[in-house]
Image (cartoon, rainbow, N blue to C red; front, side, top):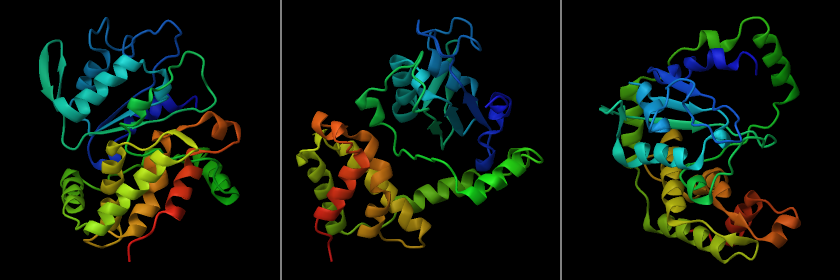
Length: 267
């Protein structure tokens, strides 16, 4: 990870627009997110985003180091305000604007536990794990000879991304598929393994992701299989396990698989 901060500004190039990345410093005293880069910033996260200017992507590396109130400001800027201020001067956020965050599951010093309500704001959570042996060997060879990030090029421009968003919004969802999503959500709320099931916000994210998958599959209509394919990534991080289930080693992914198994699939 030693070279990572130097390479972070390259993020966002794959969208054909600049990106900004920030790694908060571990600090048990809760030092503000951007103090090293913006002296005494009164709205730390919002002004950090503002510094990005026309950035289409903001990467928060090790999001658990971001204080809860600062992360709330970021969500507010992303979802509602559509603009930020830098030294009192308003700057409109670019469209589209994407927030990506990483989290280290084994590092807790100087970190903040993300509240469930804020976890619910993240559309999806993906766990990369370790690569297969052949891919790991290839990665080692590439990173020690010609790092791929140095050859990063845009795979889509802004119009492509906006077109994909519009296409996903236009995907037809039959009523039975919408009801299927609701039944999956209700199953999690009634599960004895969970202290808290999936929220309506989770259902919105699930249906949006299912529609996006339909577009990626070359269809203009969503199927139950689209819902099933993305349910784990969209729902698992939003759930709160019951103490007994946690002690038994049950995971959020396990409860989603159970919900999918036990929820009747529309014909």
